[in-house]
Image (cartoon, rainbow, N blue to C red):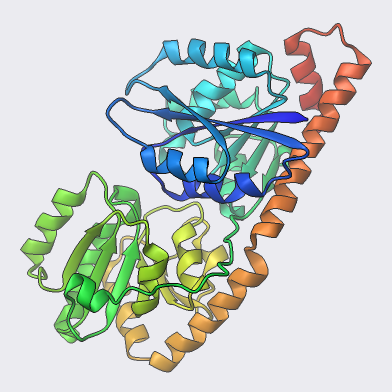
Length: 395
């Protein structure tokens, strides 16, 4: 059985972490032995992530990463990977890409895959961009979560297109009857339309633009409410912004919730104002429940939300355009229903877990075959020459 070690840097459960929770239990356990190393900062508990992975039957280990450059982490990872002796190391997010790839090479792991979950602007900034280009030379294959992220990886990180595959996130279809939460009574919301945004409270998600737009929406529809699901470092700043804008009665900060899918059905419109976004897993969750979408046309979002068909797309950092589309949607309830139905069908047909698993296992099996081929041709090759041979075959 081939062992695959996934390495991810996490502070909670966001898109990349949820992706692992969904994907790993569905992989063929007769073919793949899965192990996860979660890199976490001190005093940043990830109990909910560990619990979710444990419930999914995935063996998981925590490893502390210091906030700044941490050479000791490379050594600790290398020693652990030598013990685990995987055929593939699969890294997720920028810290794991850097530390995990170096450690895997030092440990003699035959192949490394990196999943690109975002078109992060800071990946293009020096000296990080230079370091990543060096590390990328020792990565055999890349998985982009959208075509936009694939293009970003090729153009900005100078990775050959022949080794970058696109594998969309998949969303599981729940067979259970949901216990829908009545958000009006739960959060004390007014009788007007309810907008919802499920996203971390970070700069990336563009909440400041959403709040400015919402101020304009309230001017037109005083009974409208905005429910913010999620938490993050900008919470205090955003709460202050709500007070300054005079919309405290209309905005509810609900914090991080495990029952998002039970909350969404009793809302009217899902809004995401991201400044950059590799994919937007929360959009799939909303669409799967027949919610219409208003979102920014950044990153991979236009591959998920079809403008005018499953929702409305607007330019990022444009609160006026965002407010206009929100008002247009709310004033066209029949259009919202139509967009919601089409969105649900799109999730079922395009973003299934089954397709995600087939595409991912195909990449794993390709690398396993190349590892076996190289080993059989020359078992005396050292680690570096074996890796380069695999990479030449991949390219």
